[in-house]
Structures are given as structure tokens and as C-alpha cells.
Image (cartoon, rainbow, N blue to C red; front, side, top):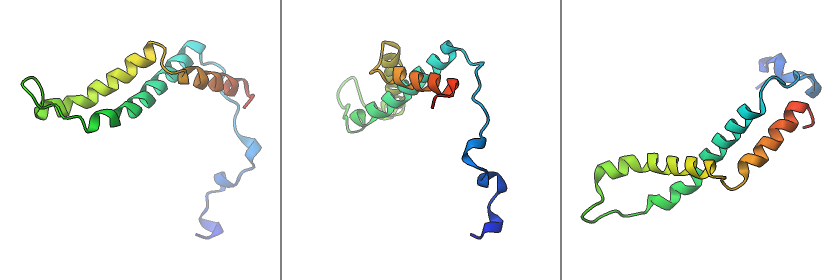
Length: 103
């Protein structure tokens, strides 16, 4: 890669970014932070169910394997709605700081 193939926009000084948008409500940011926590929790729960065998009279089959991902995703969403592990609060705090230009 030579210097001529690099976009000039990538070479601008670090301090030339646009100001953060201050029109986003705290409620909208709270929803984004909670959605992020739900996604994170779903990813953390997924390995717990990967090796789970569900043989027996009331389990197993292709249907259960197919729907297990949806179940884990909903478990993450419900955990986040119930208060989660505190990740949404931390993310929201950083989002508010970024909105004020403090980060």
C-alpha cells in the first residue's frame, strides 16, 4: 500500500471530528444501552446451552435445536429488562458523557 492509495479523509487531524448529536433523549439512549446488555447476555448464555442434551420423552429433535437460539436470546432480553448485571447503566453513563463531549 502506498501513500497515494490512502483516502485523504483518513489523514485528517484527530481533532476535526464533528460534534456529538445532542438531540437524542436519555430514554432512547437507555433503550440502546439495555438492548446492548441483552445482546451481550445472550452471547454469554449461548455456550451454556450448546452442549446440553435434551433426549427424553419430552425433548430433543431438530425443532428444539432450531428454537434454542431464540430461547437464549429471549432469556438475555428478559434478564436485561429485569435489571441485568449493570452493563446498561455503565454504557448509558458513557453515552451521556460522549453526548456532552466529555469523552
